Image (cartoon, rainbow over all chains, first blue to last red; front, side, top):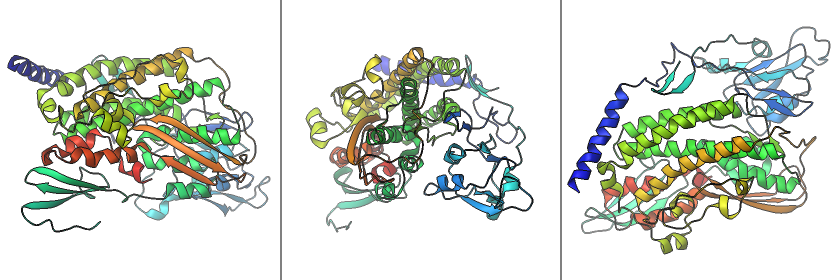
Length: 166
Length: 368
C-alpha cells in the first residue's frame, strides 16, 4: 500500500520533470504572432461560405450598392452596423450609403457577410483591433476598405517533443 | 435570501458571488464546526432572460444570441436549437452537414472538458493541472477555429446545414493533434489522476448514490459517474450517432473522483468519434438552401441532445411568424445544481471546492 503511494508520487514528479525539457507552448505574443491563412468569405449564389477566420471586415466600396441588408442582418444580434453617407461619386450606389461598423459591439458572427448579395462585404484575418480611444472603434467605410497586411508568422504545431509554436 | 442568526456555535458562511471559487453564484452554507449542515445555492446573478429575448429574434438571429450562456460549449447549446428549428421549418440537412455538426459538437465537448479540468486542477491546488489542459485546449480551439472561424463563439450551425465546409488538410491536422493528445492523457493520469495527493481529496468525497442521482434528476457525466448508463447520444440518437461505434464511460462509485474520471474518458471517446466521422464523410452539399425569410409552420417541436454538461433540451413553439413564439431551454447545469445542496450537506468545508467543481457547474448556463 505505502509502496504504491510512494511509487505514484515519484511517477507524478518524474512526469513533471520530463516536461521541463520539452519545448514550451507559450506564444510570445507581441514578438510572435499566429499565422492565419484567410478570412471568412461567402458565396451568395451557392449560399455556402469558405472556411476562414472571422476578423475585421473588408468592404469593397466599388461593389457596394447601399442595399442595407448587412445592417438588417445585424439587427437584434449586435446592432453594430450603421449605413452612413459617403463622399464621392458611386455609380451603382445611388444614395451613397455604406456600412460603418462599431467594433465595440460587433460579436464577429459573420451573418452580415452571409447577407450581402453583391459579394462586397467579407472578413479578414485581422484581429488586433484594440485602440486607446473608444470612438476609434467605429470604423468608417473607408477604413473598412483597406485590406490588412499579413502579420502572423508562427503556427501551433503538436510534435513529438510537446506542442510548440513554429 | 435571508440570513438567519443560527445562534450557538453554528456559523453562516456566504461563498460567492465574488469568490473566485464559485463563479457568479452564491452558496449560503451553515457550518457546525467544520461540517456543513445546510447548503442553499442561490443562483440568478447572471440571469439575462435568454428565453424571453429569443422571442424577439428570428431563427437566424437567435444563433449568436443563444450561444452566450455557454460560450465554451457553443455548439453544445446551438446544435439542439438548430435541430429544433429545423423541425419547425421542415428542412432536412444534407448528410455531410450532419457529420460536420458531429465533429464540431465533439470538438466543443473536448474544449469544454479541458476547461473544466484546468479549473478543477487549480482549485485542488495543482497549478500544473491548470497550465497543461489550458495549453492543450489551444490545439483543439485551433482545430475548431479552422472550421468555425472564431475561437469560441462559432455561430457555425444554421438551420439547413452548416455555414461552410471543413478546410482542406483538416483530417491530417486533426489526427496529428489526437495522436499528440492521447499521449498527454496518459501524462494527465500520471501527474494528476493517479496522484495520491489528488485522490486523497476526491476519492469517497461527495458520494452521489444511484437512486439519489435518479431522484434528483442529475444528468450528463455526473449521472454516469453514479453508475447509470444514460447518454442521449445512445438513447435518442440525433445526427448520425447511431452509425458510430463508441462506448460511454460509466463509473459506479459516484464520488468526485468518479465524476473526474468519466470526463477524462469522454475526452478519448470524443476523439474516437471524430476519427470515425472523418473516415465516413463523403463529399457532397453541406446546406439545404433556404431563400427568403425563415417562417415556421404553426406548431411545436422539441429535441434532446447531449451537451458537454449533460442533456440539453429545447422546446420551441411557433405560430407561423418570423420569430418563435416561445423558446424553452432546459439546461444541464441547472439540473445538476439540485444535486449540489444534497452533496454538500454532511461534508467538510475543505471538501467544498472538490465537490462543487466536480459537478462542472456553469452559472451562466444555469441562469440563462
